[in-house]
Image 1 (cartoon, rainbow, N blue to C red):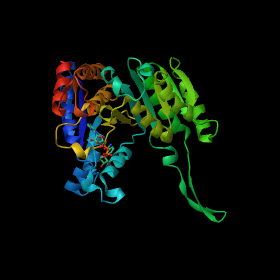
Image 2 (cartoon, protein in one colour):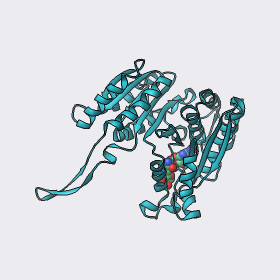
Image 3 (cartoon, rainbow, N blue to C red):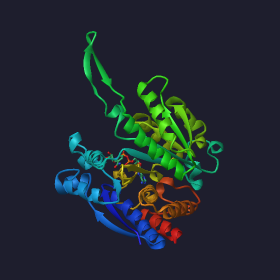
Image 4 (cartoon, protein in one colour):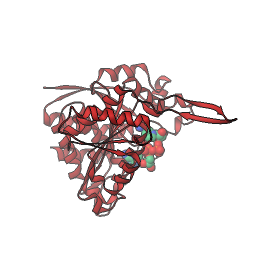
Length: 357
Ligand code: NAD
């Protein structure tokens, strides 16, 4: 029997409530699909500041490094808002991403059939469902390039530098192609190669990597066209491969197509395919402690963890099918529509477990 070591970071606000439901679902999967989970737990964010005086204690880094995967709720809240930037809960999040070397960010944009009405995009464009994946480079490009201010022609000028090494492009491209092999075998690489030199190197390198994946169809789109195509015809995409800054913008656009922040999962992977899995939403302090948060983004993050880090894709599929089934009649308040049952956070977790078994 396979044993998977998972480090749990509940975080702040609704973090503990949603993570509890995700763990419940993970335990149901372990029983049904015959694997074992060893859990460890550590502090990150505001709860770590309160307990240890820092948002990212060394013990948390050590525990996460020992795990096969990390499941995170969310961090932050008004209690810690007045702290300086590098002492705030969110600094813990950036710190753990860096410490674990998480260079690949995966953000699926999925529309579950029962929630089609929540998408701002017309029904005829979405069809029955939508399922695309944005693979974004997370530790390079203009966010990490040389920047500064200088005086030019007697006035202040600011500059930021987009820079990528071939090795950085290769490793993120491989993630995208591997992902496409597990999905519909299509990669759309996004760049601005008509203007930017870094984009020209990006395109050349992606074409080289594609040679190792003859089964995958590769096409290239300029970023401005991609932004347009995402709302015009999102179904043409399977895996979208982007650099850091384009992915930042496009993944938010793609996730909006699905219409509901409480439904969206994400993963960040390192070279060893260990990953940190988390919902894309924050700690929702306005509804914390009321048992009304939507746990599905965290539950779907667990499905991603099973598929991409733990090699348990049957269990991952089962979670996604169970969520689809439960959503037909049951909704937490954030996605409630008339004629369905309004359920709590813990009831939603129970229903997904029931649908799994
Ligand atoms: P948020 O995502 O926490 O909340 C935005 C709105 O969406 C709120 O009305 C909230 O109630 C609702 N919402 C979010 N998740 C929900 C869920 N699962 N179920 C139902 N409703 C949900 O964003 P915010 O209000 O801008 O930020 C709150 C705190 O979270 C801040 O401290 C921010 O820094 C932090 N934050 C953390 C992360 C993270 O941990 N990855 C990401 C974003 C924001």
